[in-house]
Image (cartoon, rainbow, N blue to C red; front, side, top):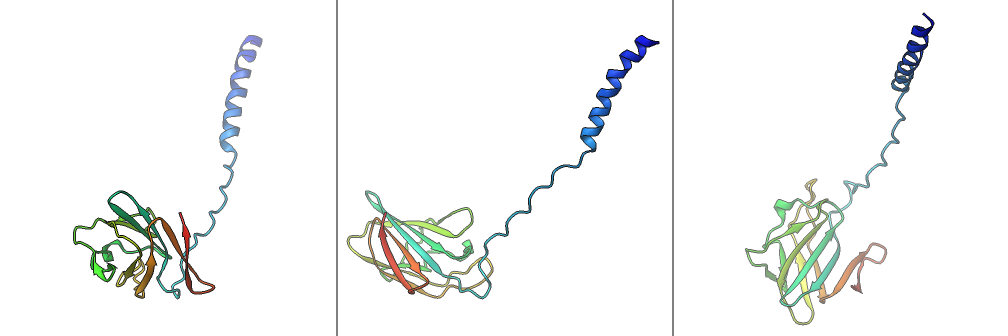
Length: 154
């Protein structure tokens, strides 16, 4: 009898330990921080532009303050030097759709880029934005304080 008790005692304690581990509540995960979302009353707008130069092309990345509706982006809504992009232009988007990237043939010197008739994911329409004096290998950022475009090199 004493042998059976000694044999079952460790087994009993083992199962009690398993039950007590499972009975403990799981630690609560911290609440996620609220995502920064553009307020509905803020205009949908361009906040930055990056121009990178390669052998034959310029790669232009346009940054927005909200997610752009990808179906509103087409070659008629983005003009380079007041000329529509070729119909075959391919547009690439980042994961959160706050950036659109496309390539154009290399341009010598300064050029302009006009963005119009794009809509955000929540259906706000962009005000026509014209960026003048753009150059290759530069980044342009819109300053909310001074309401001007600021240039920096890459």
